[in-house]
Length: 318
Image 1 (spheres, rainbow, N blue to C red):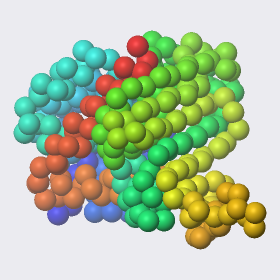
Image 2: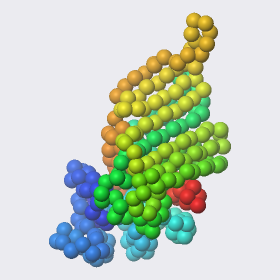
Image 3: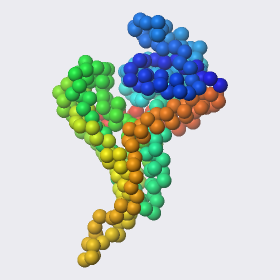
């Protein structure tokens, strides 16, 4: 079965999806934009309703408007970029949708489908790592210093009130919630380092979970590119840095005089973090399209965890 797709949006993510559609059994039938005039676009949202599914890739503050209209008028499947919505009132609307509608909505928290997630499942609670104690994520680059940033929706506190929490940190927070459940406590430090626009461009989030595991998430649009991850356990630890994965174990590694020293590297391999992102997006898209193709319900835990992650951003930023 060839899946017919309607697309809302024309930014970078929309262009990534268009490339994916062209390589798979998916036909992009129509693209909607409320104002843009072109033979490639329609200004009538209803022109998309004849498709099997509709993808929402528009700016974050417009997601709810489209979700509300589509859940009322469209009978097909909906793929929406994260975050689902940007305030608690919108969250209540989504929570109150009937299950049959929720099972046709998919929010693109693609890290759930990443190679990193598969690697963690392999080593989490393994003898090599032991019981997990602490996760750390660092994801930064210099977007806030590009000249177009100050006039974009991303830098505007009205159109993007949660800024980098919604656009970057939410991926890692969702990743942790999907694996560990909701945290029992949290703290956050928000900063506008670049002084560009009106919204925060840097955040540090600390999370504590009921099983004693803690996590640190640092994200920024105002520094050089860094994409790093680490997991510390009771018997070893894992790092991914500069596209290299290393595992150090065991804990009981001593010097000749009996002092603890760095555990040896027992595994070292190439791990491309950019490829990890591309593969996770492809896997996420395939997961969604498989359900469209088979006319099957998307498991509700995906929908509910997405709303939990979205709600956690509101709690952190309140």
